Image 1 (tube, rainbow, N blue to C red):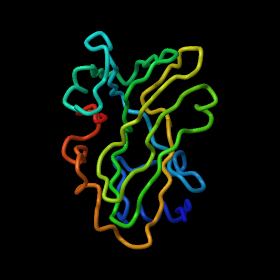
Image 2: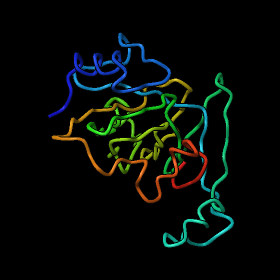
Image 3: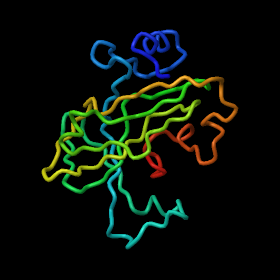
Length: 185
C-alpha cells in the first residue's frame, strides 16, 4: 500500500513525516507522491586521478569527485553520457513505520534525464536525498536550482522496524548530510 495525497499531507502536517522546508502542496503534491526539488550542490566525477573505482574501498571515492556549488540563479549543464551526484533541497525525516521510494519524473525521463539508480529509502532516514543523475540523451540538459526533479512515494510498513536507517551500518547521512561524502553525497 502507498499513501494517497490526503494521507501524505496529513502525515506532513501532523509531523509524522518531516519535510524541511515545508512543501508547497499546490505545486508539489501529486495523487500519491510528493515532488522534490533539485539543490544547487553537485559532485562531479573527475576521472583523471584514477583509472578505476575500487568499490571495496570507499575511502577512495572522495579522490574521484569534486564538489560544485552553483549559484542559485545559474544553470548546471549535464552533458550527454555524464553522471553526477546531486541532492534534493528538501530534508526528509521518516518515522520507523514508513519507508519511501524515489522515482524520476516522466517528463524529464523522456528527455533522457535519469535521477536515481537506488530508489529505496529506509524507515528512520533523516537527511536530504542523494540523486544519482545521468544524461542518457544526445543533447546537453540544463538543470536549475528548484527544478521539481523527482517524486517521493511513501509506503507504510505493517509494523515499525527494529532496524531503522540511523542504526544501519554505513548510514553516514544522518550525521553528515547529503553531499558530504560520495557514499554517495
